[in-house]
Image (tube, rainbow, N blue to C red; front, side):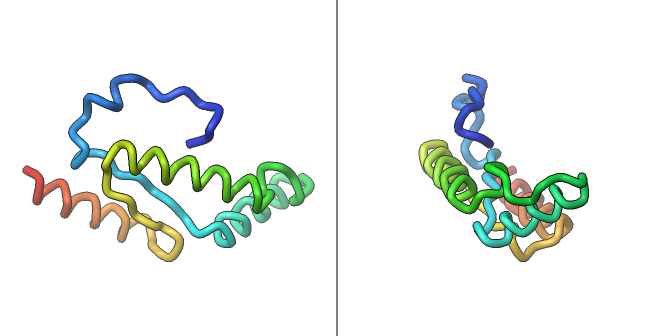
Length: 95
């Protein structure tokens, strides 16, 4: 999610229990993005990896998640498998 992107209007028609918002800790996301830029051979100090920009993106996402009323999962210290398990278990409870 980025503030500049337009969300499809259909998102508001999906039951909130079927939507999951993923978030992260600003410092963790900053580290990931800096490493990604270095891997690409680019300057790690960009707007993309700026802590201020990351905090604004996370605030935008949090506001959206609150409006959607969806479950929010902080993935900062979770593996993909852990995150998937949380989602699957919650979807099973919903069924």
